[in-house]
Image 1: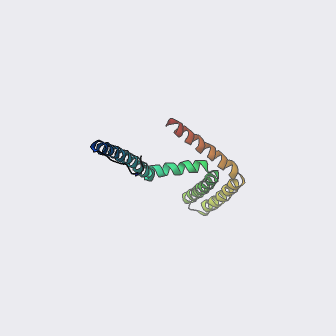
Image 2: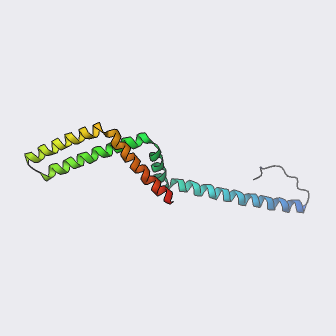
Image 3: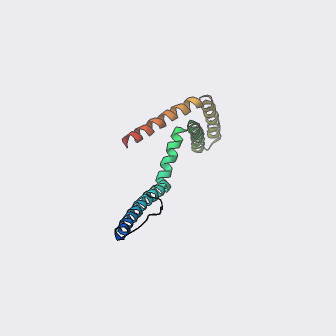
Length: 133
């Protein structure tokens, strides 16, 4: 792409040559603009944003740890609630409370091992999917 430079046009042939060059520059600029617009809109698509977010998440071990811990806590709470709802008696309530206490203790004492294991599992899955493409 040429800058807007002063070109001396002395005759008809120079004029035709300059017009051809300007048209070629215009076509090249239009193609570059189309390419940039396509890339820009591709980056704004929900699938692209999700893919980039997941990619960054798999590279950020601190975020993985936080998400995994939250998921484990939610899972333990769901399990405790499920057990408590199955037994609508005092015995069921006590069982749910005890299981909740035990699960929180086990999770807090082994959280780094659990997070590490889940992280390895996620990384394995990510690599498996990523290598297919």
